[in-house]
Image (tube, rainbow, N blue to C red):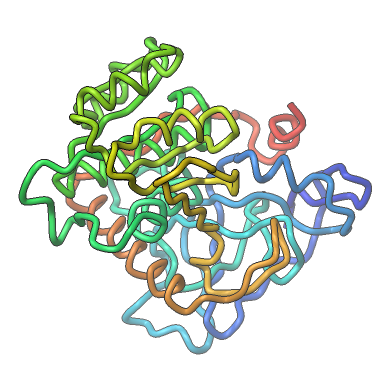
Length: 330
């Protein structure tokens, strides 16, 4: 098959490689669309030669591993998901005509979904669910146990930020479906977009008084926030929205937060795949996270089939694998 692989010197190239074979608990997927993420670019510097790049994919089921129950997956099923791509040959990647993936951590797509929109429900969407229900304190409202009284949640990033847009568009929707009041920040050109996704309050993240305004809106009682950028600037801005009683901030990167009363937590989305790895940082296999990955895949499947989840706006690259390298190198 054709695939975009690492060249061993920090670059990538389109080459002909062996078509992967699914392991006992994996499935083989013919890929019809893939999405690019900042982690793909960050992994370009890895020196291992011949590793397929990319994380997010959507496609059609071609074969099942020997131990995959037919009641779980079937040949011809339309699916989307993510990989820890660009790491090694075993984990593989999605910049190819085929990939192998864990049979359980996959979203089953309805016939109404197109392949081009679906890859945005991979890395970013699972990160959004993880931020809400693993990184923040236990007991946050969920879709099955929604908030009975007003429950404010702050989320911060500009909507133009690629995969962070993907994660934020999903967790705004998840929070609203769980009965939370969603307070978010975005550049002014994107206010209508996030309001259309269900945000209750939208403020300009460039406003130097934005944290003060959020504390005023919440009566200085806000206790939960998600920072979808998680650099030194945004973590401080988000932490400053937390009220006088202290609270919790979920991060998408491991930036330290040193604010009294604010407990910050970063969870790595690849732990939802159930396997240990050394990239992008060392992490162990976590059975609880793997179970969360399975239930999150079922959750997204149900939401899509019931028309309750909007996918991320996309920019289509017209020439398939021939153009993916151009995107990664910009």
